[in-house]
Amino acid sequence: MGSMHSERKIEFKAYDTDGDWRIVEASADARLSLMDILRSNGFDIKGVCGGLALCGTCIVKVISGTGELAPPNDDEAAMLEMLPDAGTGSRLACQLPLSLSMNEMVFGLQNYE
Image (cartoon, rainbow, N blue to C red):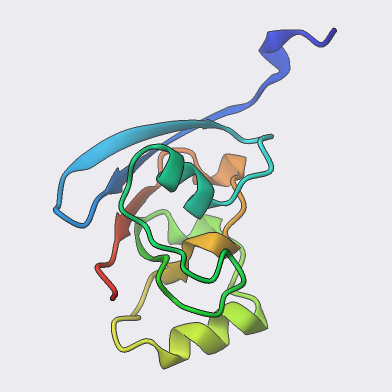
């Protein structure tokens, strides 16, 4: 059995739609998206399309640390262009896999209906 110490932890701050923030802890090896981990931590993130970058309801704003993330793929970029709320730092949480680069980043849910 693998040692528990091999698990790589990340910790970041996220603001919910009401402006409350929480520290979220996760394993960088969990093969989850940012949307998955926010949802399982009780954030009000919709993700209507199930993570296919088709609806834009998981839009988040990267408040700090945006340079650590890979740039949006074509599907994500196309959806962001269609969203009136999207701006600098906006990303689709379903398209962001958990990674060590998210450590100490700050995200905010955008209240996109």
